[in-house]
Amino acid sequence: MGIIDRLQNHAMPAAAEPSLIDGGALPRRASPGGPQSLLESLKGRVQDRLFERIGPRRIDQLGPSSLLEQIENAIREIITEEKLLLTDTDQAALIEMTTNEMLGLGPLEPLLQDNEVSDILVNGFSETFVERKGRLVKTNVRFHDDQHLMEVINRIVSRVGRRIDEASPMVDARLPDGSRVNAVIPPLAIDGPALCIRRFGAFANDISFLVQRGTLTNEMVTFLRAAVGAKLNVLISGGTGTGKTTMLNCLSSFIPEDERIITIEDAAELRLQQPHVLRLETRPANIEGEGEVTQRELFKNTLRMRPDRIIVGEVRGAEVLDMLQAMSTGHDGSMATIHANNPRDSLSRLEMMMMLSGINLPERAMRQYISAALNLIVQVNRFSDGTRKVIKISEITGMEGEVVLMQDLFEFVATGINAAGKVTGDFHATGVRSIFTERMLKAGFSPV
Image 1 (tube, rainbow, N blue to C red):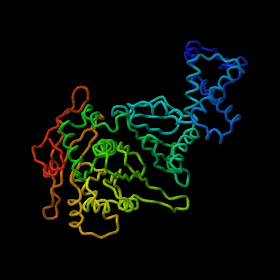
Image 2 (image 1 turned 180 degrees about the horizontal axis):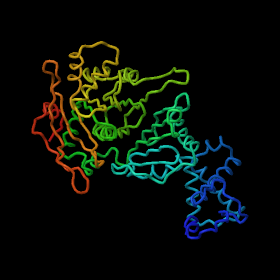
Image 3 (image 1 turned 180 degrees about the vertical axis):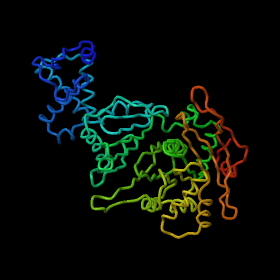
Image 4 (image 1 turned 60 degrees about the vertical axis):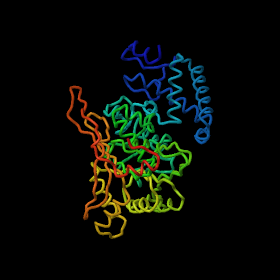
């Protein structure tokens, strides 16, 4: 039985002071009625012991194995000196908590190890929500205070060379596994620091996992594999949290290993498995407002680096004009994502972003750019039950007058909601033959 279980099974008198120490001293971080705070107190004392012995700078320089050894030594010393009664389970829990606090993301580490968790949402130090299987649920994870949460946020952003403070109270960053991180702190966040982690599970590049979950069908996978192999330019469209980046990761796995791929992102989160991948990331301005590098500047430089494929994590500004020009002038097989509710809306958004380039183009010229550059649009959607599905695969067939022509090849038709609250419906092919069928066959791929 661990220390927490023993404390829960043995109620202390109201006047007694909770203690693990024969001398009866109060734990430094103990909170009334909270047995977990006793281990938290020990964790704080272990950290203090390490700081005294090694120093903060040396701790940052230690590797994980060396730090783990130092933590175990400090725990054994405290147990011996203060005659604590800790079981092996308690010691293992204490080592894990201390290691997470000093090397990882503290209370969030267990959530990051859970492959079912796709989003971690921290609303102030005392409230944390996660998304599991498309549903948001509240957890019992909490930080000590706002300062504790700020320490974790600073640890994340400092690792990728970014900063967050009152002068720059918002930041986009990433974790080592590619998970996207966004943080907002006071004065913009009224109720304390807020942290959002959009993470990937263990199957981010395995499209068969999406088939198992009902996101799309094997027939659609066969078509998309042929489209990527034949170097069609693909735009993945969808709203926030619909799985655009996951779909982009999966489609990128179809790119042959002998091609040079360059990715451009605001916060690098794509995880490509090919051996020849060059990852580029934007840079925000420094505290003097200088040094910013935008996606458009990265894209212009990318064209000088002999790419076979260019993948843009998300098009959101003036870089769209350079991207469409590249797609229509020899850089086939490029891919990108965009925020839009349906394929037609995604074209309107592209037009709007082209206007941000500062070049005054008539509507017809912009639409000609789009129709000449893009081949396929994959529309993903998140339904009320939390499931994500590819609701349309559409192709651009050209222009008629000033209208970009499109036709749907596959679609998901929702029919209702069953007794369990799950969305019901069917995937089906529209029966329209793709205008790129011959191109796919010549490239050695069958679209069916």
